Image (cartoon, rainbow, N blue to C red; front, side, top):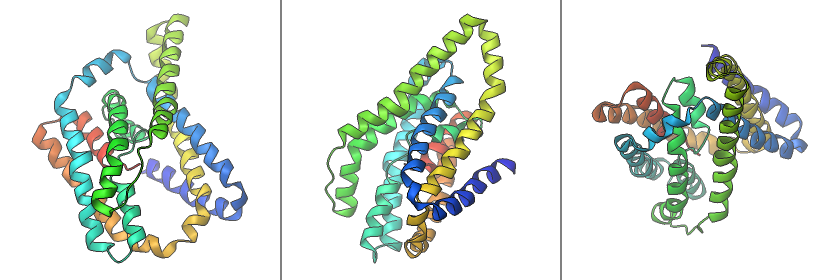
Amino acid sequence: MVRPLLLIIPIIIGMLVGYELPEHTELFESLVYLFLILLMYSLMLGVDPSQLRGSFANVRFFKVALLMNFVFVPLLAYLLASVFLVQHPAIFVGFILYMVVPCTDWFLMFTNMAKGDVPMGVALMPVNLLIQIILLPVYLYLFAGHIAPFALGELLETMAVFILLPFILAMITRKAMAEFRSSDWRDDALDASLPNLQTGTLIIIIFSMFAGQADVIVGNVVPLTVLLVPVLLFFAVVFIASQLASLRARLPYGECALLTCTVTARN
């Protein structure tokens, strides 16, 4: 019960602060950028690199996750948009744009909170990122009739800043801590400190996100109400579908939790 409140309260405070201080939007956006890097770094600190090799070899999980993220979810998004948003062309496109791209990074935080398979999630991140950048123009053309350019620069930036950089820094830190004392000491120290660091970082990110977008949210209440029903239906259907897919594929709990988080979290 405590953790959901820790995520809801920053939304409310962020909205109030952002509405009162609209001139600081760029500051809040910079905080999101920096603390997201810190969040990814802290999550990767808890990952043993030896676990990653086995994660990449898990073809069964990758097959289920990719089918859910890049076939089932886009089709579901298009169906919901066609039913609820066909009278609102701009919102229709925005809904498609949001729903067809899985979260590339901080879904790991929710996977970690659910005690899911974080090393598998680290292995999944670059695959999700690469495929979504390639397929996004295809989805927009097929589902919304819009032609979008291939965003190679954004792909490289996201890969370098939010995946590669935190991973390298985390592995250097893990090695330095082990050499400073021992691997057991490092693991105990990380187990004791990482949960609080990750929760605190997530709170700052959520606060900054809503503070930076408060004026946009307040100024677009009507579009938000139009989106409410299809968004709620999307998350309900996707959650149930990910549970059923996990049962059918006989995924262990850790992989089931990861699948649910990556399929539910959008970019």
